[in-house]
Length: 251
Image 1 (cartoon, rainbow, N blue to C red):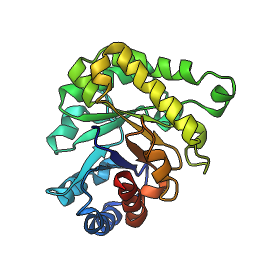
Image 2 (tube, rainbow, N blue to C red):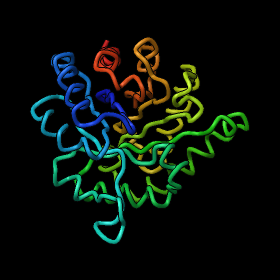
Image 3 (cartoon, rainbow, N blue to C red):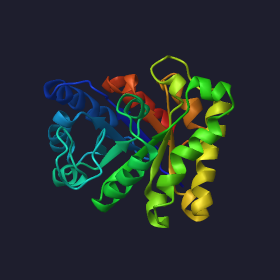
């Protein structure tokens, strides 16, 4: 059985003070949320505060990015070791906004996966197609290209522990949501790519759906056979809506 993971991606939101108010509101709401793993993916400036404020709770703290090199002349970047040193649990890699605005490539992301693994960080690898790519029936080709280079570098244990978030770009922040059939089809295809590397590990790999997930559509999406949780954007910015999505994962 794969334990559902609900991860909230704050993107570039919340000062430390705002983050502290959020977590003080969230923790009482999810105190008894058995059967689901929870994570908040926060800006770099919030990481230490959130690590300290969530110690002993069921909420993990993830960074939204990292550099693949252990150190060097990379102004403005942080390494996996820097995140691990302050007890960050994991990192989001390859979000569509990183791919689009900062030109992150599949080759670079493969290096980041290895660096995160070496530093003991959990990784959420994001994949997904644009609306045009879906319209042109290129979804599977896009997902294959985004996945295969990184997956080929991981052993069975790492594959089993990897989290992959399928986020159709046309549904991120737009209010549009993939139908249950579309989400299941894409997530099942993602699992098949993992299985092509190691069939047994694929049964343990958690695959999340992301793209305008809210409390009113979470239950249907989270009930799909190959959807093991959600990467939540805007609805993760308020404790009540994030907690409601977490509750839907175990209802």
